[in-house]
Image 1: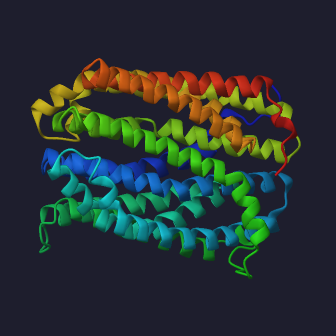
Image 2: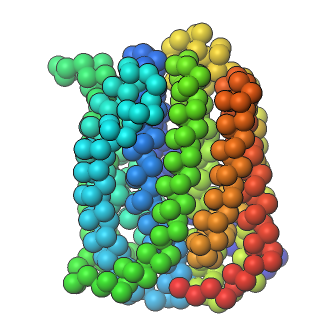
Length: 444
């Protein structure tokens, strides 16, 4: 065994706080779905459509900070610590401005964009209500992403789990009192879910700020100097991030199209798909964490001048992913009604969702493996290539979804097999580039 290749213990040491962090973050979405599933199918569908529209534009910040994470990880590998603070501060400037523009865009134009594409008037009204409140958490969420990128890039992920736990606890408490009108609060339904999410993101950011100011661990990185903006550095960061931003927005836009196609199949199919999405995202948490570890370690290796270790590290993470995800999938397959029952109290809806549930469990396994390969490509900072891979993959994904759902009129569970198609092309194209591409020469 090559001692330069991180051990499973090292990989797990970086991954587990991210897993806890993502688990807590996803509890926000799970809580919204679970509580709104007890309000009505319209509220559940409205939150699905409104939430996806919000996340599409939120992906601008997520894509940018993923690029920031890659750059910070590269500088960390180079031991150029002072430059990390310079990257962080200038990224703050960009995200602050971007969040203001995106908030205004969603608030004023969101309903106008949704109206022509949503068939059900009730779901349109619910989605518009959700957006009008949810959007005010965008600034806090984007700044939280910046802190996550920093801590992941320097492989010090401990605070991520604490911050996200705070966010989840606040969200659960506020969801309960605001959605159902408890503890003297008015019953706000879907609006309460949106407000709870926004406030929980604010609380998480406050913790990040406090703990970062007080810990000696981050002092070498020169954060919070806030010198005048370095537009050359911002452009350089955008040079890495812009393709990720486009990729993330495009990917979520296509998933939004997927849900619009499902919406044409009826409110029951949309409710099933919203539950399926929540289960899928929740069970994929270990996979997402290992993806983040992959692009960080790949970038670290390249910063240290060790490109020969990239493939061995990637394959080691994939093997670990197989063991981790298989255990989760087998356990989940044994208790479908229990897991689906978390999201709705409607026994008929639970029963109707079971076929889709098993489809997403199989998709989960393949997607977790293929995503590690894709994130290895991302870690090389060849983000133009990752965008090309995403575009080709999504083209097949959309065509397949249209063919199954619209042309052949298959049931909702068959439409969800599109996730198999997505994983297949993502993995094949990513592996091909890692095997034969010239990523070793990329400098950032």
